[in-house]
Image (cartoon, rainbow, N blue to C red; front, side, top):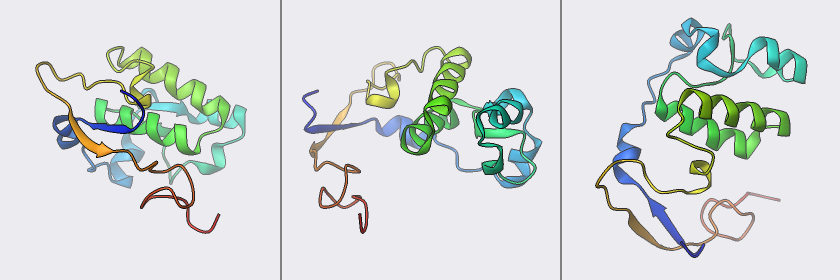
Amino acid sequence: MDGRTKQVCFAEIGKISADLTLKKRESLPTKDFAVPESKAKKIGVASEIQGDSKGKYPIPDRAHARNALARVSQFGTPAEKKMVRAKVHAKYPDIGEGEEKGAACKTPGLKLKSKGKGRGLGRGKGHGPIGRMGS
C-alpha cells in the first residue's frame, strides 16, 4: 500500500457489533477491559471510566478489540496505548500489532477493495471530510 490508497475490508466492517449498551458494559468482567479500573487508577485515567464499568476500552470480542485499538490510537495516553495494544494482542493474537495501522483483513479468501485515492482523512484541518474542525 502506497499511503494514498485507503484499503477497506467490507466483510470485517459488517461484523462490528454496536450492541454494547451501558448496562451490558457494566456487567462485563474485568478481564474484558484492556485497561482495568485498577490500572486506570495507577495511570490517572480512572475518572474517564463510564458508569459502573470495571475499566476502559471493552474488548469482549474481536470487533470491540479492533475498535479499542482505533480509539486508543486517537485519544489514549502513551500508557493506555501500550496497555491496550498488549492486552488486545494477548487476548486476540491474530489481530496483531500492525492491524490498527491498516494491515490486511484477516478473513480468508477475501479481497480488499480500494476506496480510491486517500484524502488524508483524519489528518487535520483541510485534509478531507473528516478533518479536525476549528483547529
